[in-house]
Length: 260
Image (cartoon, rainbow, N blue to C red; front, side, top):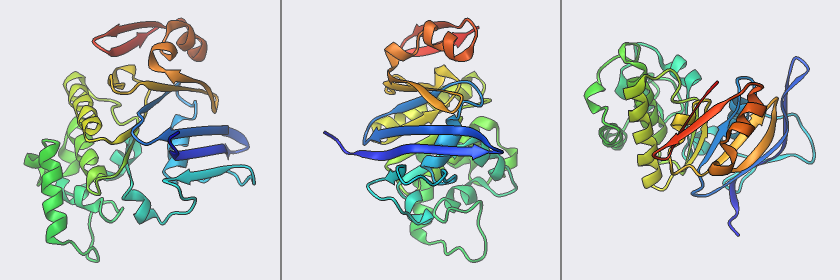
């Protein structure tokens, strides 16, 4: 049996006395792809932030967070194993920094570059390779705040990929994209799958769940209420129950859509 590379046991996060994450346990094995879905406020982003160590759960002697076999990590070392793309990160990177600077800053877990960052030729070579791979090298000198949402999202995928991490953690990374940009985003996910990355995708857009993602976790009110094969979980009965409204589901060419 495979040992999990992500293991969260009994995690609880409270804000203003309210449980945003309520005694949640979640494990992922190497090479396994997981989509986390659920309504706004369900706890998806909070779970992602617990995994990335941006948020620490309440202390409980029975709870634990084990990432890649270790319970304690230095942030710079963890970022070499865990690439992160999120809407909140895009807001932080929406600046006058150029695209290549934002990608390079991934080596230092910073937002952009400063005088104390020691950039090597190897860094620059890797940045060019990654940006060419995601087809954004032509945007290298463009300011982040002048990119479209889709272009900025692909630049952030590059930033998350400079260390060639084992796991890609994507939190609403396809939100607010138009149809062509969403198609390019899915193509980027498929590319990551082909490279053997483990994908953890938190989303409210079912169309972002590429065919290679076979496991779906459903969250509601800070809890995991369902976890299993995509074909069993993404159904009208389950989604209608979670969203509290009649939901219709369609599936075409391996992709799902849902509407009320």
